[in-house]
Length: 419
Image (cartoon, rainbow, N blue to C red; front, top):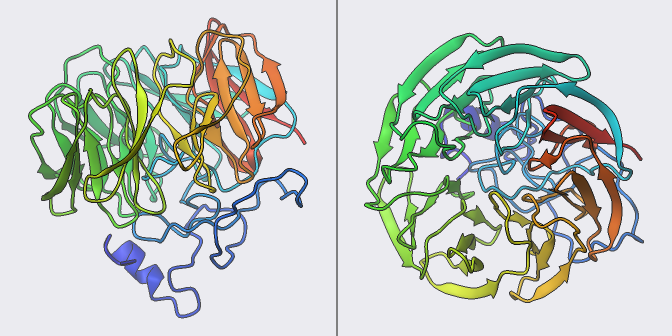
């Protein structure tokens, strides 16, 4: 239901000509009617211009109309791009690896850069700061929290959400002033899971050590908190129907509705070590295990469809998956077909790789060591760019198809673009 997330979506849903097909505040490009997801991302087909959305099947329950991925209120508003954590942008990324600009920042934590509708970039740091960066200029302001700060999240009203290493959840204005703070509790000095924010400004997060997933109201009050009785090692994901999915260290994946009721669970062998990812058909993709991490696909109701052994680089600091419009799953530099078979593996020289992001044409972008890779839908390397920083974090795709990535030693934020 398009109105399941309150008056913000309901008012838009009542627009007579648009119904659920609307462009939220801050979205760029024109909205086009829904169509079937592409099954062939052949580069020989007509190339889409950078910055123009394409159609994707997600409904508008927890996202605005999706195009290639969810079109939200900002180009990249949260870790994983959207509540389903598809890590897929509705626009085309850079076709040439060229540094447009870079600015000095504090040492970033292992998280993504998010971009607001006004072009401001936000990055969490190891020192516990949230830094607001003006493209090509530098740090406009910083907010100090307990270190470290994971990927922040942006709300539809421009609020900036971040969590500190001590478990505090903050909502800030776009100028850095504090709106409210609430404490969810966590052992200090640990990089906790990043928060997610919906179109109704409700936020979703987990406590990491206490095994409690939370739904937090826009003012900072708890809607509910559920005891999973096991550590939650990663953040939640939210399906297009509003279902909340949370994995735990005991191998249990839970499906929780908006009222806080657990509807079903799946018991999997091995700890769930990354946030779930929700496909357009309702399947949940998760990474499970310790030394021998594998990808598993769980159907709605808890049945396991298939498991795929690791084909990605080992030794990564942290990983999560990305979902292409054709159903391909991307984990770092390895692509897995919708049937669970290895589709291709990119030739990476480094011993580890970051989580990947995908653009509207199925191109994959990820970091490995100090190199950024762009890989086509067939697995061929399109370009490779070596940056000054020794260690790169997971990239994100900003407005105009710009690739955004933080790096350490030296600590810089890079914008990569080019046609």
